[in-house]
Structures are given as structure tokens and as C-alpha cells.
Image (cartoon, rainbow, N blue to C red; front, side, top):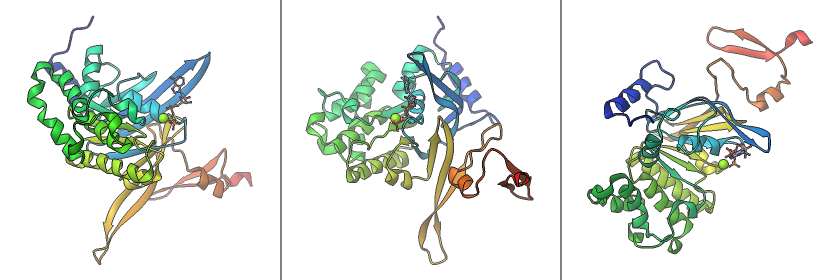
Length: 315
Ligand SMILES: Nc1ncnc2c1ncn2[C@@H]1O[C@H](COP(=O)(O)OP(=O)(O)OP(=O)(O)O)[C@@H](O)[C@H]1O
Ligand SMILES: [Mg+2]
């Protein structure tokens, strides 16, 4: 059995992972050609097929994509609940592939927080809201937890549910339960908060409120947040939306606020496609269809861009 690493060893690994020049150096999340193959009834499903993703510290990112594209598979790996078949992933300097069982437990308790879609799955039904938030503190600190319990009230207040501390989950609405779930996930100050369709069971107005709660956590508590969502409102409100297609990141939209000469603010949006580390790009299907491009395209280097044209030799 391997012995528990010392603090210096752990710090050494974290510094190593953040070393300049290394892929995703210093990022909160770096996935490097992640592959996850499931085998069921002798059928193989390639849920992730070489997925690359880098998320900067402090970012708030939405992950979108068709059903079955691999979003939950990715989140489960990042949460330390599942292991990839190949590829690499680091979160907050922790290498998800080489962690020992003990490190993995600590990772799940203290480095990442998780909010599920099913409101009932996030909370223990026989504990009050405050007791649910206190539980991860007690698990992490044992007998010394008392010194940390002031955090329970602070978190519930920050999420606008300070007055509901003594209610059981069954006495809360779905939206209130999800706020408590965010407080539970943030109890041990994780570096990264992951959420798999956290607004999926809520109506759109309540969902918008929950999304605001994620924003609060991102802005005021400094957590890096990744939210899987089908909700176009959520996807449209974040700085960065990454689309997953067939187990790979395929395109992303970046938004920034621009101020014109009259001081008017507006949001400018730009769509990008991913350039993987071997130089592959996935061109948007609608562009290819518009120009009838298939099988082979002509590529030319211009001074400051690359031109991609229909195959003119075929004519
Ligand atoms: N435990 C498993 N065993 C076998 N196949 C699985 C398992 N988990 C996921 N898959 C398969 O992997 C693929 C990706 O699934 P995943 O749950 O990651 O999709 P998703 O993007 O989260 O979809 P949705 O939007 O419907 O939640 C699917 O084809 C799914 O059937
Ligand atoms: Mg899913």
C-alpha cells in the first residue's frame, strides 16, 4: 500500500502541475485528451473521445450539448466519482489519475463541490438545512468542526435563505432546496463547484434565481464554477459557453461587455471552434452545408488567417 503523501509532496505535485509551459498550467481545470469507454452487454460506448478543456481560475462556464454527448460523464470524472479510460485531468493542481483512495476522499470533500439535478439527491431528508450544511464541515474537521460552524449561517445568508435554516428539505421548495445544496457544496470552500443541470427540475423563473446563486458563489466566494445546462437562458448569461459534441469539446461562445462612446453597455458575442493539440478543427456544420463542403477542402495560408474553400479541383 502506498503511504499518505506529506504536505511537501502534495505541494510539489501541485507546483509541478502548475509549471509554466505545461498544458493547462495554473488553470483550475485541465482535461487532456480524456477518453471514457463504457462496456455494457458487450457493447462499447465511447462517452468521451479525446476531450480537451481548460477552465481558468475564477471562471464561470456553461457546458451544453445534445443528450448523450458526454457532459455528465465529464462532470463525474471531474468530481472524482469516476476514472477516465485514458487521457489526463487535473483540478486545482490535483492529478485525478494518480490520487490514492485517501487523497480522492479528501479531494471529494474539500477540493470540489457538486450539485445534482435531482433536488432530493443533494440533501439528507432527516437533517435541517443548517445541519445539512454543517455535515461536510464535521466530516472534514471532526471534533474541531465547532470552530468552523459559523460558516453555516454565513453561507445560508449569502444565498438568501438564512431564515430557512431550521427547515427540513421536505419543508422547502425545489428552488430553496437547490440553494441549500449550493451551500452544502460550498461548505469546505472548494476551489471548483460542479453542477449537472441544477435548474433542470425547476420552472424558468426559479431556475433564473438559482443561476444567480451560482453567480454569487463565483463572484463573492471566488469558486470556479462549471454548470451543465440545457437552459438557453443560463447558457446565454455566462462569459463562456462550451459545447460538447460526441465526447469532445466542439465549439465555444465567448461574451464580453462592451461600452460604446455614449457609455451604453452591450454584450458582444463571438463563436469559436476548438483547435485541438494535433491541429484538428471541427468546422460548424451549418457553414459546411452553406458552401457544400464535404470530404476534402482546399486550405491556403493568408497573411493573418487561414482560408478554407470548397475543393475546386473537383469541378
Ligand atoms: N455507466 C454507464 N454505462 C454505460 N454507458 C454509459 C454509462 N454512463 C453513460 N453512458 C453512455 O455514455 C454516453 C454519454 O452519456 P452522458 O450521461 O455523459 O451524456 P450527457 O451529455 O450527460 O446526456 P444528458 O444531456 O442526456 O444528460 C451515452 O451514450 C450514455 O448512454
Ligand atoms: Mg447528463
